[in-house]
Length: 150
Image (cartoon, rainbow, N blue to C red; front, side):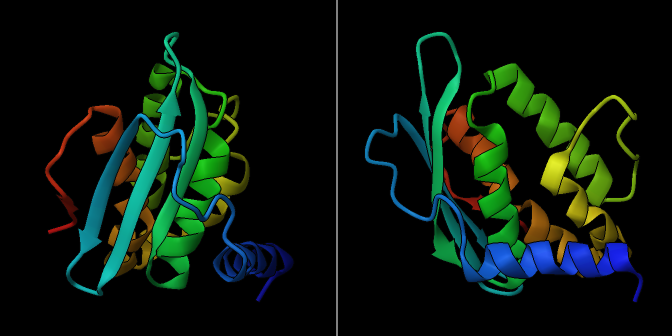
């Protein structure tokens, strides 16, 4: 395994062992629930979006595999301080990356989210990596219907 793969694996394992923002959002004004029936991953995403459309806080609760948990953890870090359109753009770039449809342009910095590049090689894991993101989208759109990867 090369050094870059080892780094990616360590970032995912770290966020799985110690997920960031793993809590109910006490000030959340948007939330949504998601479920991956294939493997049992469950996530509840909480967002606090201010009047200017900026995500002031993002958190999650739930249970799932390492990829699902790490994706939710890194996602909550990545979206804080961003506008809703910026979050939606980030979702599009992340989704294209993990589905193998496109790599982000060099000027688009995915930060830690780049560790999920290898997920595209394992189609069954794409749903694990994107569950929190689809749930985030539902929260942004204030959808009350639970999100399912099926």
